[in-house]
Amino acid sequence: MKLTADESVLLASPEVMAEDQGALIAPGATTEVYVMARIPYTKPIRSLRFELLAQEEKAAASFLTFTTSGTMHSIQTVENGQPYSVQTVGKRADALERRTIMYEGIDSDIIYSELTLASHEQRRVQAALLKGYFQSADGQIYEADTIQPEVLLQPGAKQSVVFWARVPKGITGEWGLALGTALSGGKLAEPGQEVSGVLGVKKLRVNPVRPSASSSLAQLEWYPYSISVTKASGSLQEGSPSILLNITIDVKWMESITAADAGHKLVMVVKDSLGQAHERTLVPGTDIQVPGTRTVSFELTDEQYKKLRGGWFNLTLLDEFQGERITLGSQSYNLTFRSIQDPNVEW
Image 1: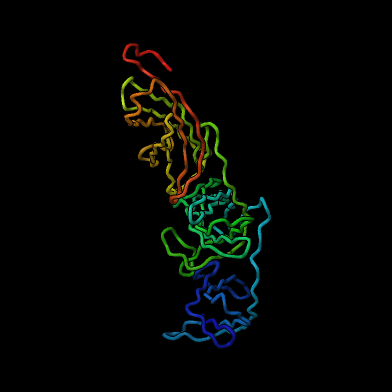
Image 2 (image 1 turned 180 degrees about the vertical axis):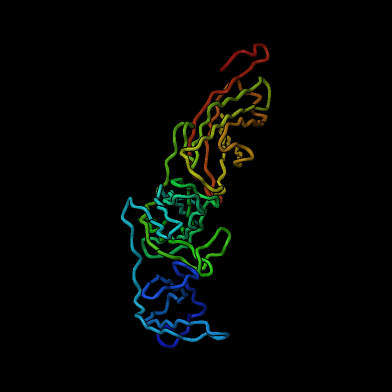
């Protein structure tokens, strides 16, 4: 295949993708072929000339040439609430936006979209790998990183696919997420392969939200998990410079879905009755079970605690992704004070 723009510019290394790679075409039959090439986005293209080549002995000979207009068509937009559909045979599935959130940073923000991909195949398959690009209301385009499970997808099963990109601070309004099936070397991309192109691109409208924090620590959304602090206790011995804390965290699946490790961390911030904040970062699978229940114990130490005869502490849980944070929820608890004379007194 040779591809020429405006009768003069030979486009380098066009890739050809057919519905049935390597299959013969019977007389009178048809097949669908996709041709992918890179064109500078700053260059207007008026025409494209396709030259199909056939291998004859040791040389490639031209057997068909045709020219078409180089009209640039806008990307089709999917209606709100409707999925992006993968139509490739053997990979058929629908991807529906679950939510899009914004992680606010100091110098930049992160836009983060969660999609649910549901397979429509009748057997276990490797789901099509998706590639995405975010577009702001003013037309700026930001390439998204994709987080997608590599395990095979059972018939009717679902997987969580995440797209995220770091963007300048303060961009507001509706965003677009252009989605397509990832290609590599003229074929559908497989896990671990470098993506060289995108097939069947359509755009979803997404409206990022900044989640509000809960006033309790029960059933907090940390998708695909739900987090609850089922027990939080703090004890202070009279005259001691240390407060012992025991925090029991229960993590459950929110739904039956396959998800890849996106690199999220759970941050605990404890504020004592003196107004001092203490922080601890929990790594899923190491410091906490996902899913599962685990009690995290640690001490707060300060000489000023020797003067206390009671008090409280406030516990805040935050979701950390790529160094940026969202507050999930916060709740306060009373300290148990144990005097030297009567260890059973509670304040």
